[in-house]
Image (tube, rainbow, N blue to C red):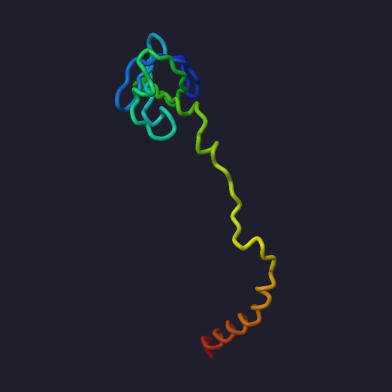
Length: 126
């Protein structure tokens, strides 16, 4: 077998089952595109995406050394729509219109220290 994991090859659809699509790579080798590897997102029906006799480009995901079964993917050749439509929005933890800086902390610091000192004095073992 001259195929390797990661090879992009073209094959012909020979069968469609509810769990995946069988693709003939050459005269002796056939692979399976599992339903999860057919496209990004939900797949309602494989016969809406593929037709018997159709030529498809696939990437080889895995080759079982013992059985010779070849796992294929079409999805890995397509751009991920979640990555292309994602827009990063910066999240602000404070109000951007108020420029108080550290002043509110400085204003309350003496009260917090006094309160905590009082609590520590009450729990200190003498």
